[in-house]
Length: 249
Image 1 (cartoon, rainbow, N blue to C red):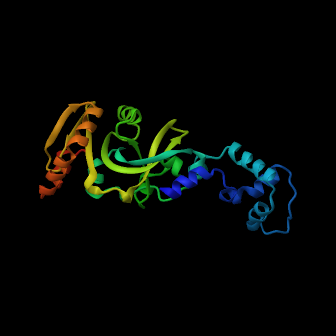
Image 2: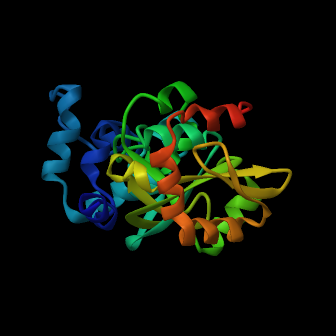
Image 3: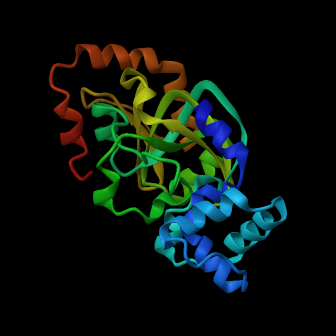
């Protein structure tokens, strides 16, 4: 998280775009030594460029019109602004597969900084390859309530105890918490299910603890009763009951 914080704070790095230097030079009619191998032009130019040249290069990169694939590989600082460190507390992650996360933890995520700001471009197959970064909201925030209502990040959710880096996402126009998935204790992850607009909490023995509640009420219940859910989890010998209870997921 400290590395991510520093990375987002650092801003534009020309070395992230070394492969674009030659096009930049040609587009701006800037002379360069054509005897240099094409693969080395970017490195040579960046090493010798003045601050003014680098600023011009930065403007070129920020104002070009990349296709969606190229944009999806952009460095995270192109889409995310660092806001603050999120201290350990209750967070919520929206998903269509809450039981999988409760059972296994956050075993999948986005593994690197590039493309972190546009993970929605990733295919379902690509999403389930590596461990890495994931997105969440402060569980008691307005952003979490809005996301619960819209369902744009997933129909259901998991509430968990964690920390991360709060960043403003320019595309989504909202602040989100970026956390490292493997750092989350699986014993502190709890599922919320949405059914016909209402929310319910289901324990791992298949028992519905509360139902017909608002999202905020369901979150509050988990925060105040998570030790009960942990005790049920410890006593449950057949965790598959929950998956059967919600076989549609």
